[in-house]
Image (tube, rainbow, N blue to C red):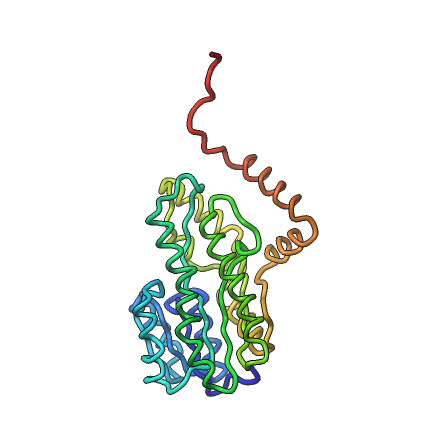
Amino acid sequence: MRTLTDRVAVVTGAASGIGRALAVVLAGKGCDLALVDRDADGLAVTAALVANRRVSTHVVDVADSAAMQALPDAVITAHGAVHLLINNAGVALDGTFETLAMDDVTWLLGVNLFGVLHGCVFFLPHLRRVPEAHIVNVSSLFGLQGMPENSIYSASKFAVRGLSESLWVELAGTGIGVTCVHPGGVKTNIVRSARLCDEGRRGTVVAEFDRVARMTPEQAAVRIVAAVERGAPRVLLGPETYVIDWGKRLAPVFTQRVLAWLFHRVRPRFDAGPPPGPA
């Protein structure tokens, strides 16, 4: 987008983390904001940080199709138009594939995949009505490489990547840009609020994430907004994301083997029981 001044941006997952940081950066660029999240209290805090611009808050679950279908009209009523859609809301689910409960799988896909689909489907007609618009879909490092104990999270983020790449091609030349974002370790609460199949591991999982997460939400937001301004089709956040991206380009099978070796060396296998004895 050539300018963000006096444009209207919709940001999902705006109650904390990257979503809140995006709201602040966009407000500094002169954007008016429609902030979307399930967390009304968190939305109120974010709205107070960007009170220098016209702001509306919308307490919506992005997994709720009916609520998301009604959201564009509410945003248009509040702001008159939409120019920038950022599908940022996301959740996490930790556990090996065989330990996952289908209710948890449905929950994650509802937010991470269908939340993005709902945003794109229901806002795209409104984005077509303005001369210049942009869609940002937040994938992940796990949308570049499938990770152990994150199979469904990885599946959702690969799907967001595929959707974004397809949309970019279909919308080329229409005045609507598309950017897919692949964050690595960004210091947000996504792991603290994740669903874990083994709650006894929460402290270990959180501590490991805190150890590797080096980028702040504010740094991530600045990079994402810069990508929108230059019309970049994708943006990688964090050195670990570049390592995985190039590893998958240059030696995709070798990268997979290294990851398997590390996983089974660092963390014991989930065995159903002791190996059977001699017959």
